[in-house]
Image: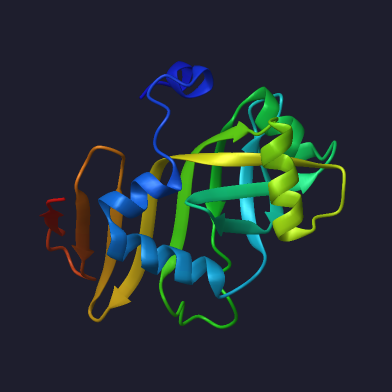
Length: 180
């Protein structure tokens, strides 16, 4: 997918429910990792194209991954200008990364429907006014250690789950494709 396609929405990915339907076990692990902590890290693109990292509370609700933020925040303005984002789950304390290291990427679609905004506000009680975006996923990645390997699970819409095991030596990684 080209950067123009990402900006314009062509080939825009899938909603959270689409990932759940395609890969329920992987989606469950990803949601659990995000649920372990309240605050996570959102990457957006500044006007000059450089990255901006900010804190955010990701919310899985009604088959969607929601990104809510204060009105007029830099991250909201970034997403309005260029909807591409990366969301990294809080790794937590220490170095054990229980549940793995999880990140999702995609496009953020701003929600402007007053009924949806009212529903969301009723469910979550955010400080108002607020911006609300719905995630369209283009990639989900989970990394974890399975001694003696580091394991990467990657998924993209329309594709299989790929599992890559890398050892500490010079041996080539082992790649497994898990059909859907």
